[in-house]
Length: 57
Image (cartoon, rainbow, N blue to C red; front, side):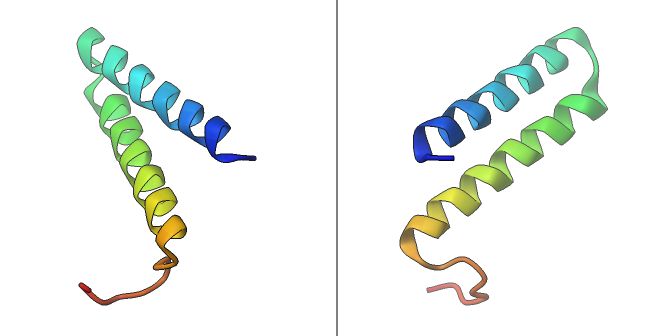
């Protein structure tokens, strides 16, 4: 899976979380927002080569 498809997937998860928040499903939307944030953070850190490091550099 290349970066474009990962970006699309993260965007879709975020939009579904937003729609869930608007409709009042707060537990599901919170889970979707968290998974989109974690996936985006992992993707950014993988490009920098810092995945798995526990330092604040």
